[in-house]
Image 1 (cartoon, helix red, strand yellow):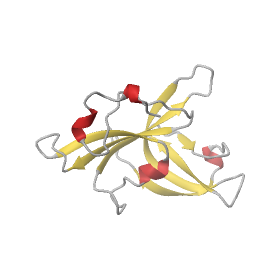
Image 2 (tube, one colour; image 1 turned 180 degrees about the vertical axis):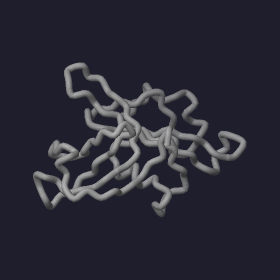
Image 3 (cartoon, helix red, strand yellow; image 1 turned 45 degrees about the vertical axis):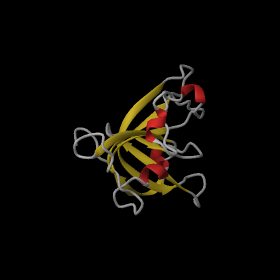
Image 4 (tube, one colour; image 1 turned 90 degrees about the vertical axis):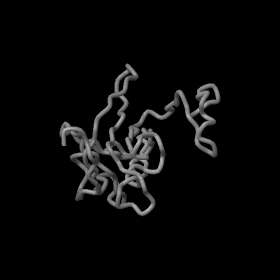
Amino acid sequence: MFTEHHKHPLSSIYGGTAQLWRALEIELRRPWFLVEIDTPGLQEDAGGVARRTMCISNIEDVLGLLPDHPDTTSVLRSVSMLEPSHDACGSWTIHPIKEVWEGVELVDQTMRTKVVLKTNGEQFALSLFGTPADAVQNQSKVADFPYAGQ
């Protein structure tokens, strides 16, 4: 959620519908994705490329940024998952991810879910039912993401 109070004073320099914000409020305690992309044609550096960071709420929108997607002109640099803790602390951890897999839900065989593979080798299922990653059946790889140390 964005509020006018958090609008950056330089927000108007981009014109149109683009806005700059000093803060965003994440209302839902579920995984989010931080995505680094390079966008050609913006004059942020001498090569005409601007690096941008986006906070994206679902993996399908992240997959839409891949180079083979017909609507993208950006270059994906990295994807990390912001994961809320499951304790009373209310903290978050960030994990770079390198792959996305898709498989069949254990609870409802008619539904499919995505599983992300973190760069540390851990898996996390983005299941509506809370299905653990190792219980998602018939998994096949959907995407590879670039990451540091690759």
